Image (cartoon, rainbow, N blue to C red; front, side, top):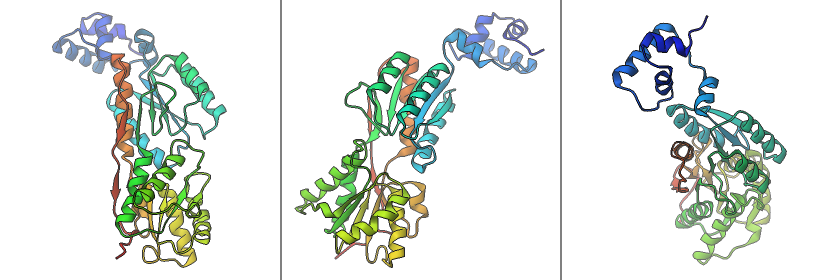
Length: 335
């Protein structure tokens, strides 16, 4: 028969309430009492029951995370940051793969509600009225990660996409490039698609370079296949480009592959800069110069904010994270 919390309390000569406070890291006991209880737990081989603890303190020590695409390197970097902080602070993580499907997202929100998660991190997707109403009814802390909402009062952690894209294109201009094309993500994506196009345009205009719509091709997403498909299209409609800004590293690496197939040397014939600084940027041939988002740090920051809200019951301020250029070998300076 498995030992119970009552057995631990009896062996340590303390109350059940004291054992419960020690297990849940609550105050109200001495160091010696804690040592005596932990020793009793060890000797008895007691395994705390998470469900039972949850009934007592109304916490399950779990958080839910919703990702549009769990297979992407982008998501994996965020998730590592999330899990490191969650486990450090005694929480487990339930990951949900929504595939940008509204129906699937609603299904997972219902599941997380049934699992009584303590809080939710909502990533890389627009917050709709339908989602928000469900989250409001759940009455638990929510943090938006790599996304934000102007309409709903939810704290967020993200990079300023327009400013980051502006920095990437400005870098190309500083290297002597003026005939710059762009392979964009979905222009209807208000979170990452449109802001990065706007940053591209603004960088050109601020330096007196006219914007030419023929120098921008729009993809359906931000994947490797989009870069392969769109670079030939871009070069066909915009002659004599010296550089290309890709709206993600996966697009950029796809463009590198397409350039190789076309016999175009990078960076000798064409410079390419990406966006994200994923692991694939280091692995590319040649290694990709890119605009870095601190994805791991963003995951950590979002989780810290969520758990702080959970522990204090107080609102937290949103955070705009810094971005930077990581120079590798795909951008050639022009004299």
